[in-house]
Image (tube, rainbow, N blue to C red; front, side, top):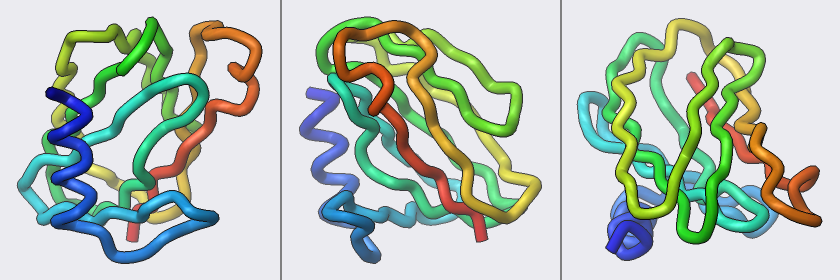
Length: 117
């Protein structure tokens, strides 16, 4: 069910692509979705500085770690749970999303992006 919500979110809010990964811009004050699965984060989020979003994060397969760099945000992401984080970006820039929970042979490749304008 979470994967279906992510795909609907991408379909409704896609504004571009980066190396084949959809870039998605949710409405300020709305819901944003980020999906973890071996070994990727999907999609790339484009957010507005100073705006608040409800970020839904879940895993499709096994436990992953959500770490937003260079911020000090770390969460464990479990399959079957819709973790909802209320976030308000305070800085513009490109932020890396890294899996900080070893998830197998491709773990070192599991990075994503959040773009803040």
